[in-house]
Structures are given as C-alpha cells and as structure tokens.
Image 1: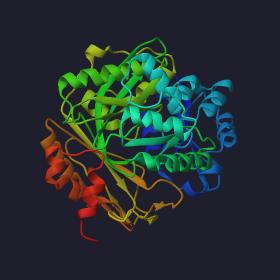
Image 2 (image 1 turned 90 degrees about the horizontal axis):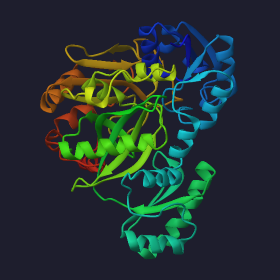
Image 3 (image 1 turned 120 degrees about the horizontal axis):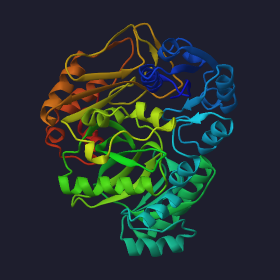
Length: 450
C-alpha cells in the first residue's frame, strides 16, 4: 500500500480523498493557495504546504510548486482529484518520471481519450457506437458540408481540444455552415491553442447517460452501472442519479458493455467515466471519456457499495480488483444535488463568510463538503460548496429523502442554490423522469423573474 499521498486539489474532493487515505492508513499532504489557508482540507491532512497565491495558475496549476511540495514532504504518490491538473497527461508524466505513483490512468490513456478525434477513432476500432459524422478532423467548410449532408441536419461543429461547452457551434441549415465552421476554428484556437474541429449529427433531445468504469493494472475492467446526468445547465451538471429511470435492463447491459469495451481499448487503470448521449429510441452514442474521478461518483458508490477513491488508491499501488463484474450488484436508487454558492436562478457567484453552516443528516443521507461555520468562501474557484447524496430503495423514496435533506440544509451568510433544488425536486416532470439535457434550461425560462 502507498505510504503518503499528496492531494493536488482543494475543497470537497480533497477532503474526500484525505478521508479515504486515513481509512487505509495512508499519510496525507494537503497543498493550498494563500486564499485557502483556512480551508478544511488543510486542517484534516497530516501535513499542509502552501504552493502559491490565490490564482489557480500560480497555485493549483503550478506543477513545479506541487512537485516541490511532494519532495519536501516525502510523499510517494500524488492524487489529482478532479479539475485542475486531473486530466493533464504531461503532469501525470512528470509525476511518474519523478518516481512518484500517479493515482490515475496512464498518460497514454489520457492523451488518447482527452483528444476527441483520437478518442472517436479508438472507439470506432473498439466497436463502441458513435454519433454519425466525421471520422476525424475536418479541414475545410466544403468537407464539413459533405459530412453534414450524409449525417443529416442539424449538425454540431466541435473543437477537438474543447470542453465545458466552449468551441461548439450548432448548425441547422447548410447556408450557415461555412461561417459557423470558421467561428468554431477561431474560438478553438483562442481558447485551446488548437483549431482542429470535427463535425457530427446534433441530437436534439437526448439524455446524458454515463457509465462508471474501474480498471486495474492486471487487465481487469468492470463497470459500476450507469448514471443519469441530464439535469444540466450550460453543459454543467446540477443533479445526478443512479441508475437512470429511463434505461431498461436490456439497454443497461448494452451501454455498460460498451463502457467496459471503451476502457479496455486504452488499457485503462483506475476510475473513469464513459459518457454517452441516448436518444428517445434508446440508441446511444459515445461522446467522451473523463479520465479521472467524477464529481458525481458517490451515487455509483451507493448503489454498488464500492468505494471508488479507495480503489483508485489500491489499483495505483498495484492491487488487482477484488471483485468480478458478476459480484457487483445494484441496490436501490441514489441522487446527488450539487450545492453552489450562487444565486439560485441568476447563477451569479456568492463568495463570502459563512456565518452558519448546518448539514442535513438522518438515514441514508451523505454530505461531501469542505464547508464549516466561519469559513470564508474565496471568489477564485468553482462555486460548488457541498454535495448532498441520498439513497433509498426506490427513486420515489429517494426524491422524498432528498427533499427532506435540502430542507434541513442551512447556509447563512452567502446565497446558495438551495431553492433551485427545492423547486426542481418538486417538479412533476422531474418526478416522473420525463426530461432530457435541455429540460433544466427550458424550465428555468418558464419561472417568474426572481
């Protein structure tokens, strides 16, 4: 087992990793920016070390500072969490070349799946369903028009190196394609330093379904079933659940098998997520892989009883998975609500001092957070301050339990999106499971001005 792990992250995921390490008897090192000097993860770790000023570029993205902290604290492993450097193959390479254990997949796996063009090519080889469109990079508007005619309009032009909703243009008619193609290339070059784009059919009312996978260095890969992640705004998830109430057993078997095939095609080690779009007819198509732990991993943990962070650490240390696919069973339903320090309907951030924080409790309620009364939320990072996760035998009961948990939550001193979750959970369409990836944005437009 590992001796001491440096957590190259902050907030609730840093706290989550520290807890998993302590359960395994592994020492922990927290790194922090000057703005996070009083953050919870700095208090819970065995050692803490400052790596720079508030700006992420000078702290949590500062590779030399992180590597110096690892050297000073006698670590033997680095866990990147999610965000920041978690999917940076060059960072993973530096960690491994410096003699540390990287808690994550190989840099090669990250590079293949991190580039949308190479990922699509590998998925095609593995027999994983792909959205109709280009086989790779598209060089000209003329080529884009030919592909669009074959796939059928509407189409979406995407930056190969894009993410977070940037570098995307939807085109409904051929006359608009050339201008959209040029704009997408320009945006991609400015945002990512790479103007490579590709074209695929745009699915108008799909659901976002993802498969949690876990692999070891001995060639074993399993899935922990699927998650429903269609409740999102601006391509950012707000609420997730597992399993999806839309996916029947036959489709579940197919999409999970596709997820495992995708992971095996890149010799994947560790926890990862294969993301799909699913049409109303339950046909599904690969969109991307996240080569890291996900924010919503707790819902998969709760329905399977498997601790994903623990197994990230174990497989990084060289252990084989202790369970086969046949031994992983689903139990009940889990929902996660992301609590952000922001206006619930205008989505403007709300940093500041938390005068009072009270987390919900009771049966089958889990809260992952780094918040505490008296803590000052800095304005420099993501606005998520807590995740509330509930579990129950049925989806209906799980929703009621989440409603009770959201009611119990108290965050005083800053504004949170608590009210958004209250209204969402009470929405009849949500309760019936009748939604797609556009549901939340369309519903928000119908709400009276707040």
